[in-house]
Length: 493
Image (tube, rainbow, N blue to C red; front, side):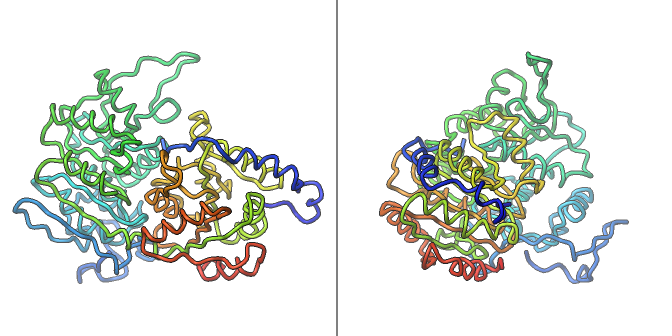
């Protein structure tokens, strides 16, 4: 991963060269981010569904802290009982097989146990749902969409709209895996470069209307396809907004999202709307409640309980930008191959490019993703990282939300996240999403926040106050043993 000692003379750049690069790391624009026990009859170590045998030893567990309290607000007269097994949801055998064989699930997580009965049972009320990163939210709405499809009707019946193409592609992969045995058709509606986009040399052909039963895409593309009469709303049963807080935020995709929802309501007023995210600030929460139908259900977690228990957070005080690079090079990435993959978050595209250049010149094999890259390059970088071909990924907040990679155990906040229009104020929601990239599904993880100014310390303090937690400090940025202790405490060494 790093250059060897023998290579250090040629691979290590000078402090002067590094300082030249570091000048580019400042003053550029911020990039916006374009379960319970089984029933007694199934308590044996194997479960049988027809001729299907499942060994539970390989099943997946979610990060599902039992101490977390999910506040539930229900409307109407329908009583909802939590589902402690997937069998209690009356799912088709093909979907159960997908859950157990393909997804390796054992039982519903807490958010799944509570939300799935609300999603799957009449009168199919709208839902606003918030839960921890890695708690199984994606499986909630994916299973909800698959369960509502009429296999005989060859028309769009479910939409899932995501803020980025990377998240849309990832959600489609999960859906196809979970629905492998169902025969349900699906498609990704994003800009050219993935899935069913059609190319002929230099010129794109006119796309035919979408007939897939489930469509997952980005808001701009979905809106365009609807406007072009290439995406019918007539048979739509369920609409999902993933990372809904960003989809409904003023600085996110609010206009597109509201337009799509209003269009659907005009054509199909009974369509069920589901909003899912790990974070909802009060402004977005109030706005979301106005968009959904009068009778709707809500699930929320107190912000004090959102900080992931399986992920250890640290702050590192550095005297300057050069020291931050040295911490990454000499104190953190040296352990990278032993503890898993690493994502380094920066604030701007220029910062991503500059930090990438510095680390490559030092001798590290890193890749970088940011919004200015070509779509096919972004897809390639994500695939290589997910396939384990690269170990270190530098990213803007493009991948802060919803990006699932089990092997990511380290997150480095080279820059702390701040509000786009208020750079002195932390973006606590983005911080929560960033640290949620480490320690997915209950795995151990560590987050290092690199600070090098009074402004950084003020922002860090505000983040601590927001979540009601105190983040441990690494005593000395120059002392390797302090980082060893931190990683051991996180369960990574």
